Length: 150
Image (tube, rainbow, N blue to C red):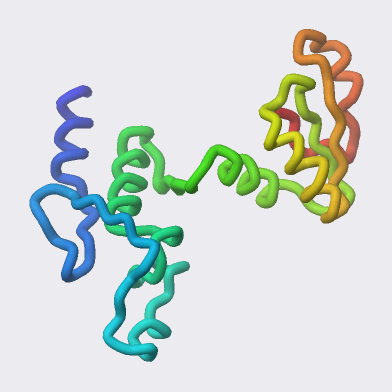
């Protein structure tokens, strides 16, 4: 099995678009991406990965890493985000809506607590804290509005 994973990583099907090809994957830190014209820039759609528009939307480096992590994990796709809090916010925004509730352990990562307290609250999402050592208390807090419990 180990050999199969190594082969899949070395001979992975992802290929960077023209202009980025190399035997090894380059490291592209692209806060600024150059275009031949404004029309060329507008023709690219970062959401469909038809080209690179801004480093935060992905580069050949990040797209290759996403594909290879998905291969390692047996998944179909992987999405890299620029920080841990961005990953937490991505999950919260995907799963929560107005009227929903998230339950957070009392010892939760501080920025995650602030995300819930400030940003999620603005969207009508409530949060409550629980003692992570008291499973019975957590179970008692679950209700029809609970969508996420960390």
